Amino acid sequence: MSRKPVAPLVGEGMVSVRVRVRTKDVVFVKGVLDAHDGLCQVFAEQGGDLTIAGPEARKDELNAVLVDMLAEVGGVRLDEP
Image (cartoon, rainbow, N blue to C red; front, side, top):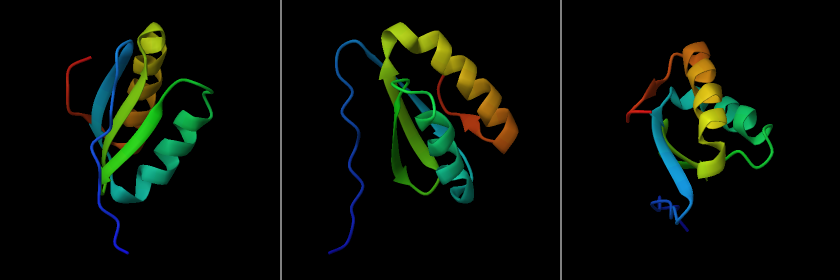
């Protein structure tokens, strides 16, 4: 059975961020974000194109983590903070 990407479902009270990293950095990015319990979920749609969704109440914390992490891996944010 082949895998097919599915767009993430982001409901009320959630924020989402789209980023692009190198494919080889996806596991690292997911590991860093998973280490911050309850901060967000990572959805990989294709290669290094990621959608990251988390609670609106932790939006500032998520943005701070993303700024540092994207600088470290050379990733880019595809939407405005």
